[in-house]
Amino acid sequence: MPLRTSLALRTLLVSALALACCAPSALARPAYVGSEDASISSFDTTSGALGPAIDVGTKEGKEGEPYTIAITPNGRTLYSANYEFGTVSAIDTASNTVVATIPVGEQPFGIAAAPNGRVYVTNSGDDTVTVIDAATNQVVGAPIAVGDAPFGVSVSPDGTRALVSDSGSNKVSVIDTAAGQVIATVDIGLNPYGSAYLPDGSRAFVASNDSASVYVLDGHTGQVIGSPIPVGEDPSGIAVSPNGLRAYVGNYGDGSLSVIDTQTNSVIATLTGSEYVEWPAITPDGTRGFLSSYGAHGVLPFGTVPDPTAFSPPIVTSTEAAGIAIVPNQGPTAAFTHKRIRPGVGATLEASASTDPDGLVSGFAWNFGDGGSAATGTPSISHTFAKPGSYTVQLTVTDNEGCSTSLVYTGQTASCNGTAAAAVTVPVKVSFPGVKVRCPKGSDSRCTIALFAVKLGRKHGKPTAKIQSKPARLRLKPGGTRIVSIKPKPKFRKKLAAAKKITVLEAIKVGREVTVHLRKLRVVR
Image 1 (cartoon, helix red, strand yellow):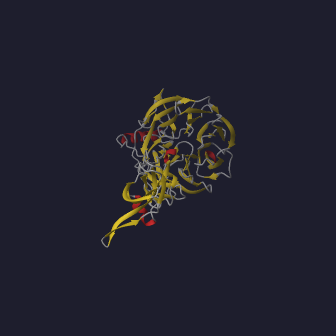
Image 2 (cartoon, rainbow, N blue to C red; image 1 turned 90 degrees about the vertical axis):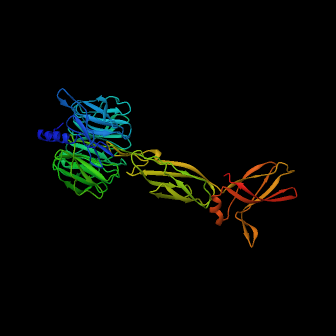
Image 3 (cartoon, rainbow, N blue to C red; image 1 turned 30 degrees about the horizontal axis):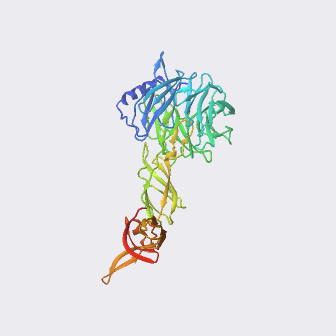
């Protein structure tokens, strides 16, 4: 691997490590930074506070050089390609400790943690790609032969394709991940390096290091689309925003960051400010970015909304900064409750039981199943179902970083580990209030029953009974019971919707005899 650092810079970073020893370790949204020494550093993407450093070891006078890193979509395991050791370290992000060391090929360089549960590692020293099962941390199958000096690797969001930048061959190898073999090779300028996909997988972007350009590829076939995009000198790493609208390119040779509009495939902004920049990364909410810089002894923050105009002061890490991986945002879980729902009366649906494991639920999208829908930023909503019936109500929630049901992945580390649990579908019954009516056991024949809900009052000193509902009529066998719906008149709907008991005027006819009762019946439905 070409070394791009100096002894003087190493000395400066040792000093930085001493200053960083007592920095806060609480990380709201942690990011990790690879290096050309023996450790991986970390920092909080919100505050910039340094977190713990992770040592991948030194042996036989060599440091591991965990140059590029990637994190599994569930955020639990960080993988580093240890260039000098020919190994990959699996690191538990909860404890920041190495839990497995996996032998791979010679001089592993690029690494991607894919949505299909595999980790792909380019072995630049023996021109192969090693596949690791992230569940077992075991190598899967034989190494996949690719072109000369493979450096960068990115995996499609659907996990079916891997693009490998064969720097020595000036090509990109397209791997069918199911078959585990190269199905196409594509000419890519000179010295292809970093690459990234759009979140929908339709296109990919590859940095042509010695051509000062970025190539656009079909995300499935790998074939080149259109003309190369001119960028800065010596483009290296690429990151695509979670919404897919921007691609950010670190140009090592002139210390700049090129911002590409992915809809027009043109550079719309260029940032400068530090020497030897290389690997960009974007936060899961898409509002901030970080660019590794040897010249800045760490990473350069920049805002992305609107498009960046300048770098913020650097975050000095404890390593010779290389690849950056930000812990993926985990999707929320939707849940809602409701009380009895009556036709024509506003019902409250309450979604405050929805949760998010690493943030807050901030968006609630409702489909009420009756043709109505709504989107709010609060968990409670009122909706009126016009007619009785059974409705399928769906709630989809989104967290404060924009994560919901869909995975957002652009090649190496996910931004959002979307989950089906962010949407919940619940059958909702909408009915008029129901009361239980009985035919007396001693009746000689069937009962014919008619009843009205009434409101009792007085007028001019005399008792009154104001009818509140349409008549309910039914026939019952002696001793039989049935729950009857009370269909209130429009002006009484709200009152009867909340009633626990309803006063009814009940007329029961048995044979020729009719009896009339004024009674209170408990609402049972």
